[in-house]
Length: 95
Image (cartoon, rainbow, N blue to C red; front, side, top):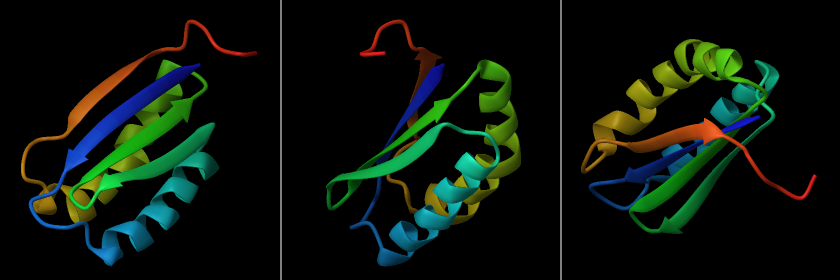
């Protein structure tokens, strides 16, 4: 299992339209084979996108087919700085 964590720092308070579009995008990630997808609002300009995938192949496919276009359309133009993204293999957990 893999998890990708994306810190998103917006130039202005996160618009409601981003939150609304995220629901559809995150649903599409799971429909395409992702295990889980969440957007966490830390404060008015900082959000964390947490995505869980069964393997690296699925992660790369979903990033290309689903996530990339949503990010370019709804997120990237609103950011104050580039996305801080980290992705890796889960090596410990409760299960």
